[in-house]
Image 1 (tube, rainbow, N blue to C red):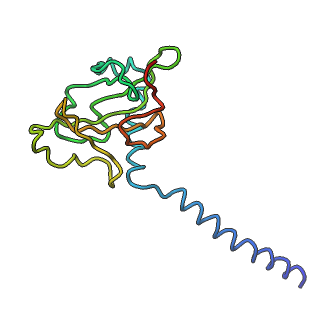
Image 2: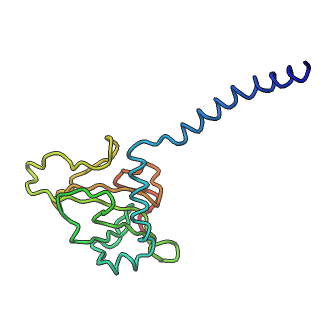
Length: 167
């Protein structure tokens, strides 16, 4: 009888703990749709960790170093009016302390035909967290996504203070 009581008391302790464990596991497995999309983007662009891979595919530096952004490597055939999650138009690089270009993020661009009537920003990531901006000098919508170099202000913010000003 004592054995049965010990068993039941242990069982009574384990049952609530198992529910607690399962609840925590569910929280960890639940990701927002945009986070799943970010993981898809990371997987699709991981090969660009080496700038020579991007260059071999036809990406080239169109900006030089831009403070708090880095170098913008563009692939012109990708520039159109379509947001393609796994095919950003621009790969962002910034030199490390040894001057070696490091992959820091991506940028999506969509041309705007009439700046006086730009319309709505492109449909990008699921939800409303992505922050498309109009660049009037280039007549385009732009969305920066800091998928490698964490941006202290947020993954979709235009400028990344962690990149620095190049000085």
